[in-house]
Image 1: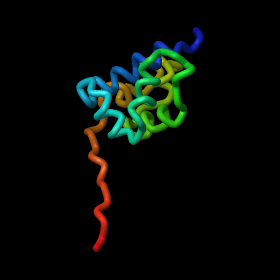
Image 2 (image 1 turned 135 degrees about the vertical axis):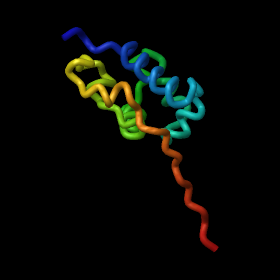
Image 3 (image 1 turned 90 degrees about the horizontal axis):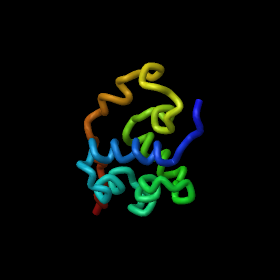
Length: 99
């Protein structure tokens, strides 16, 4: 297996943001519950700007495999449903204060 490259992860993150939010990074960050700078770090192809919390949020909220995200498995090794068919976008519910 070749070495893990930040640019590969950033490309996969960009694919997810493009599919889910039409490339709108602000909407994606809000949906993921992370600040826009953390998402920009994941898209930067620079390890120094990556956040494990942001990666975890992306995996959790987009329901993707960590193996797929880091590129350690080929599509033939991975269940294609996790890569090709993303679940529908879920809206996060916000709590309204009780009076």
